[in-house]
Image (tube, rainbow, N blue to C red):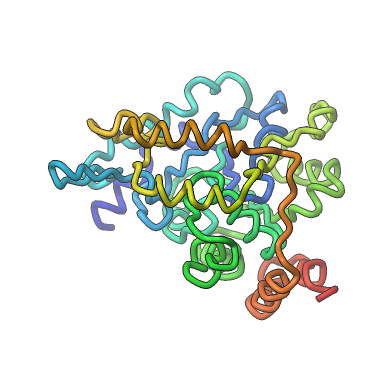
Length: 330
């Protein structure tokens, strides 16, 4: 075993989480986090951590920092600072260790990250994994809206599919992603949940998850089931949001600069000119929860046709009927 692989094996397995909600992004993971955290026997780390692929620039481009003045990169490196990274990860659970008998975290990048699967499997602790899967077309469109409002989408939905489809489609390709996980982790440690089931029959869905985690479902306050912790907000003017994003695309990755174990000594805050643009934009184009975005029928059909081909054989892989639920009317 090479040294870098050794660095990714915890020498404190008792400090690791008992389970991880590993994705998919924009599929209800935030709501599930809130529900499980309300269970008296479960405590969830506060933030989405992304630890087991923290050094992967494809999964976390915002976790790396470039100083144009010194022409140097600052990165999250297990090779260079293993003790710092592991201590940071353990520290995310310290405030909640006495809250419940099970510790959990959620990181929506893990599902798409084979390196995360390898590193989780490497641990001496048998960490369980929960993956929530949403209809791939609907998840892709929701992913676009997430990138739009967070400043990273610089095209319309259709132009994003033309010029940069990987940015919103890749996280919907569950078949190849789960094949990697089943290669390294036994089926019995992986729980597949459908987003549609979570919405339509939340009580039975959560009951199954509690059974998987071996905690008593009856100890949950069912009023928490009405929680929707990450309701999508849409810009009032979509085109204006795209224009704003293009102006601010070089403003820097400030949202993570004070969260990560390796923090930059520069980029402490957004430059003044970008802050002014952002402040004015928020006043004239606020995010609103009562605005509904509907993709064109042609775009929806275009995506459905693509995913129908990509997901053939999916039911056999995950041992669950999904394909007909998603595509029976297409």
